[in-house]
Image (cartoon, rainbow, N blue to C red; front, top):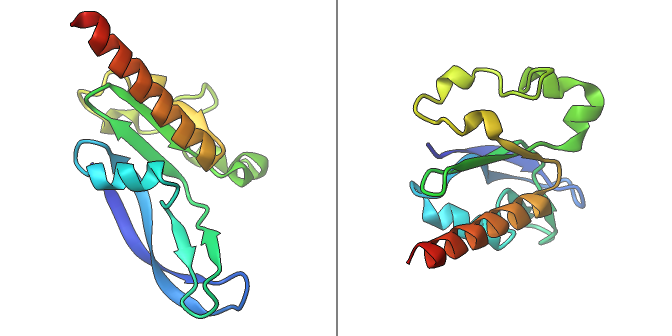
Length: 138
């Protein structure tokens, strides 16, 4: 599943407001363009229409690749510092509501990251592993 929405964002530079596309989840197979945007560092990026300042919209983002079989979840570290991460993840490190991922037997092994650049690096890493595995199978 791929989920996104529009949210009014205020520019941190000039305080102008505009709507921006905010991604909550990206499924690589359902929306390969969203994956490409992520890999290009443009996901959840707000560009102010007035002053052209670019700023990151710091929201949790779940990345899901059904073909390779993994999920990676970005969380702003502020959620860890405030303890609000426990709204999403239980104390054992498992996703709350994991039953909402039927047929997704790799959900308990979700990889958590706390930096968007690390999410991009992890997705690229898994793509390389999947490519190598295909070469070895062939």
